[in-house]
Length: 423
Image 1 (cartoon, rainbow, N blue to C red):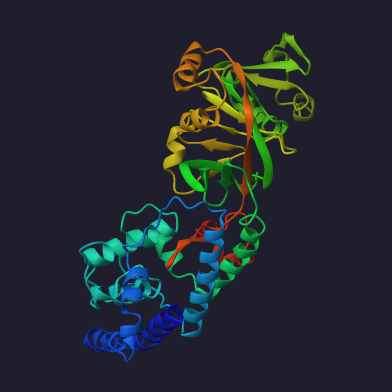
Image 2 (image 1 turned 90 degrees about the vertical axis):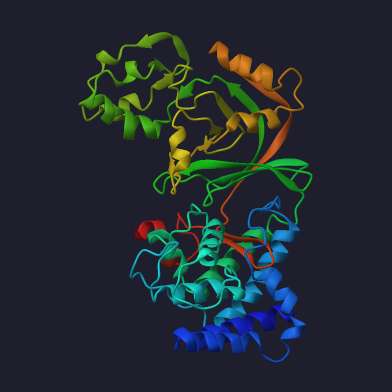
């Protein structure tokens, strides 16, 4: 009952603090922390309710531990919700280290209730180093750049009501229950779409994490279970029909040299001997998208290839795959929902080395050597590695550490969680 008592007191603090400021608020907060029976939960409070708890761990998103922590988080958030939730943080000034403003008070309250700011930081209108560390912790839990600045997106995340977060946790608990207690393999890969992140898991722990680029809202990355069975080094890229119709045709209308400049050749399917001259096609004819959509547009291997150095294949009905990209700058974006459904992987060669570890003849040196040749080479894994594409927007990696992500595809049942669409 220590956890429930802690959250009950924290929630009570919010209700009291919401109507008090300055010295009075500080006095109320101190009374809460000095309340009778504190000795029963003092140490637990500090360990669960401070920035010392690790936000990023080696715990896989699909694991019994995650499931247990999410169940605990639901219980905790129920208590916070019953006690009045957390206060809204006003958007009056830009909040960052060194700022002194009345809006810092509600910010401190908000961070204390969610466990990001330690109670020993006290109450004041100063954005000090304690608040800076707490904001960075909050940002990390929400997949934001941990810069300590309460910008527009951080503010939107902070002002999502606790009742909405509680609903989000319950929704994702159901998703986790279908996988967390199943045997997924000794080694496996998980692509968490809303987090735009990839986990390589072995022996029950995450051994590699990779930032990803996943499908845009109009071309969503699907949920699937498969097994990675092939790596293609220096792959050819075959443009999907949707990209030919929606992207390539309009680009050719603007720039007749687009295909040549990007080393893309046109063939009839099943015939790679006879290349079709792009100049023989009237790209402005309304019937052209239907005609060329049935042709094969293949890009040569090379640095400008859409998949760059490697392609990771696995059987699936959606014709999606994972791959490298020449556009490395996209991985630095906050919103990494830019693809046509496939998944681009940052530091993909590290993942490929791990995948091919048990395939004779393909260590890092041989992989790099093959990339340098510029010649396409398919490599079949000796032992296929299970691969799971999932959609988890809320999970927990420990007591008091709850992660949330934007519900980019609108599957959680509340428009309040589609924060990207609101910006």
